[in-house]
View 1: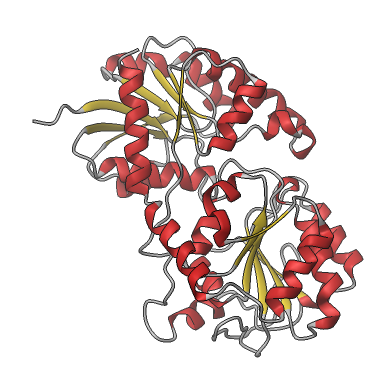
View 2 (view 1 turned 90 degrees about the vertical axis):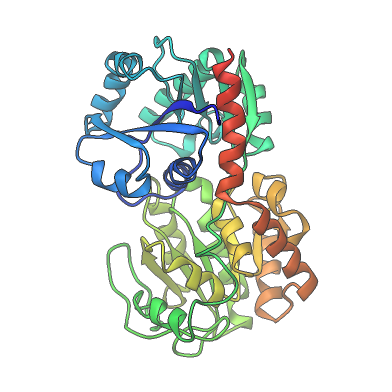
Length: 402
């Protein structure tokens, strides 16, 4: 008989439209729910129960946390410890930097990245103060810290004294959605038509572009090739450098477009300024937040996926792009290089010249050969959420023995 571990998972920080760390928490909850060696308790916000019961139908869901972040953070310290004691939880997982500091239940905390230390100017001041403290507390008090990459684990050791164990657990990819072929003929075109990106008129932060359909490898509906970035528009993604790099090669590829797919985060005004200064506003398309089921179609249709982030804990869009068989351009010396290896084109972070040369190459048709593309597919195939959950189970078992 399998010895089941009674585990609580705090999902209270996951927004309605999750990206990045939110997607990680959602996918991890779903993968843990499917395991026979876990008795999972999902701790959610008061009005968020239906979503988590659908995500983890075999698990308990406790909808007790307040909606507003300041109240949730106070609740985590004051009320959550008594909930864990009452539920006889063996291990608690805080998947977004924080933990109840005075609970007697061993805690596992995920530290996604150290950008709050490495480059605090990329974040709101209030978040820097909050998360710097939370990371230091987790490093000292958590029984186990989970990092999504060795790069993050190394940064954590540089910035903090770590008293517990550290487990590196790579993220996974949903291979049912992110795959190299569309589910049915014409389905990608139908998905992309929902974005209304067929027009050459750029979208503003809240504006709408002209309608159009998309289809064919690397083509928008009006027959133009496009590059795509997917992610929140925030300083550490370095989208302004991507805009500048595209502007440098755009004259050599007059049909090409650059699609920026993602919601506006803090500091997104820098992207708007870069677009305005580029002289390429008519060829840079803003989609805003993109629904999960559209992203694979974007990846499959693009000439290349470009993810020039300066700092990432893992870089999930890079792995998802590889799973779709898309040529990938990303940054060297990063967590993305750790995962993708030589299956991606790597450029130094912030190097606009190197990035423009990489863009020029793929737009000229010098993308990866079949062997290199297959290496990317093989890497993605090994990064399942089930495998990630297995690594997390190692962390939970370590914590339970602490």
